[in-house]
Amino acid sequence: MAPSVAQLETSAPQTPADKVAELKKPAVQTDNRIIPEGISYPFYYPYYDVSEKWAPLELFDHDDPGLRANPAKPNILTPNVTTRDLSPYLGTEIRGIQLSQLSKEGLDELALLTAERKVLVFRDQDFKDIGPDRQVEIAQHFGPIHRHPTSVYRDNAGDIYKEYREIDIKNNLVSWHSDVSYEKQPPGTTWFWILDQPSVGGDTLFLSQVEAYNRLSPEFRKRLEGLRAVHSAVDQADYSRKVGGPVRREPVETEHPLVRVHPVTGEKALYLNEGFTRRIVGYKKEESDNLLRFLFDHLARSADVQVRASYEPGTVVIWDNRVTCHSATRDFSPEFRRHAVRLTPQAEVPIPATSD
Ligand SMILES: [Fe+2]
Picture: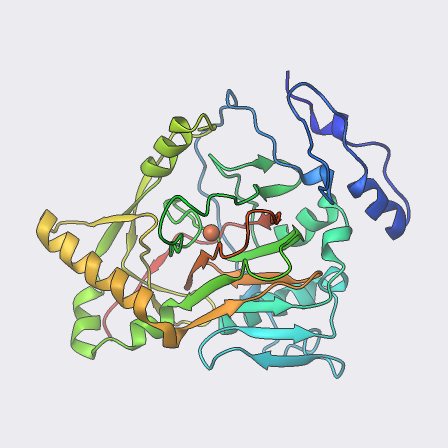
């Protein structure tokens, strides 16, 4: 029998220092959940029950918080805040603000700023120590938290990343994707932070699918608008079954527009990724394979629309999963542990672009 979340928790801590101590306390040991030594936050140690099954996701109305935001962002861009853009097109490093302290208006502004800059790297955050209840409460401001069908997921703590120690399997493990794009309402403003990390390495690569779209010729952009592509969860589910992991929801295949419009900025973005996009609707296989190959290569080779987000202790990275792709880099020695958490609020059904 799997340990319930309640079994892994004790009474609610009162002070911030108590909360940190609680998260770091060795969790209850059971036959099913052996926690190795050296895990800084045993509360988040990966665990799943392969027999768990969930119903299909249901559609919901998404009201993007970015639409409510004051464009001047007075709650985020305060006099104490310093920002440094990582590239003209995406990525901004931000210091001098605590995400855990933002008001509802501040969170609305955060949604807008994330949509505009696409990736935000917040330094010196106390976020990982505020506890899973508060973390989930904050992230839910942006939409219902997605429950991952095959990864490690806990209802009150989000997606938990396992340790990556698979460096020798392929020549490189760069894999461009946007998270769970096969869902009917893929995630938008996505939160990620690391609990244990290597001293160097393990950055996340991000690319702007808005700028990647803008780089195409006007004639070619027109050709892409109106097309739809199938995003599939089947390979991910098959892999999970093969390695003895869970498949909690039966895998879905969803048609999305190949060019989508961001509901807040109005920007158009290429909406496909090598991780999950499998075919162009209505095209013969050779036509589809060739167009997808060209577009996947265009994204992967466009180093001039990409950034690397690096992690320091206390970093929280927030990205807009609707207009970016990302890839992990697994360049660190296997002796290091990288243990991370993601909260993945779902957003709208993708809005198709139409030719101007
Ligand atoms: Fe991802």
